[in-house]
Image (cartoon, rainbow over all chains, first blue to last red):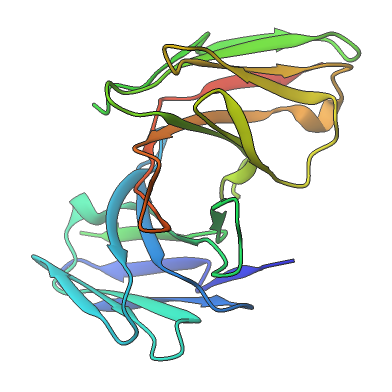
Amino acid sequence: GQQVMQIPQYQHVQEGEDFTTYCNSSTTLSNIQWYKQRPGGHPVFLIQLVKSGEVKKQKRLTFQFGEAKKNSSLHITATQTTDVGTYFCAGPASWSNDYKLSFGAGTTVTVRA
Amino acid sequence: ETGVTQSPTHLIKTRGQQVTLRCSSQSGHNTVSWYQQALGQGPQFIFQYYREEENGRGNFPPRFSGLQFPNYSSELNVNALELDDSALYLCASSRGLAGGVVNEQFFGPGTRLTVL
């Protein structure tokens, strides 16, 4: 079955630094979504990418969808304490008829002030 | 806040018992998906309901079952509880499909189930 993998599992960042987290799928994705889950909270939708090679920005966050639609990345610049949480990517397989989302295990981000 | 509510917030059961979890979807959403999230893991898809019909199922045994009602609220039922069923159960509603693309999921706060 489809597998979505994320690296790194943990990211410890100094406040003000940049970092990137990566998402890879074993199958081609029709689209990819990113979610953020704060400690003790629930996943909150951040963005959806649909087109091959698509790049979207949200303030300090830059999301990219790979040309082959099998990988994605999230780059955060000038990390702040508000960026703490776990970032998940999720995607349905493009061949799927039931549109279920497969989530990666997430990248948990901690910030050193 | 997403407008998706779940009840109860916490639940403790013993092995072999049955449990029913409830979810009210956001206004205007006709699709509800249920996920199981174990500690330190990503949400795992259980099943999805679209207009009261099951629209897909993940790798969960038949003792996990669900319902969706005409108002699009939903229930998740788990029979013969096992210790490994201890997890956060998340409900997510969405506007269904748009051109074959899964729309964003609006998650509720979850129900924390502990099986002893």
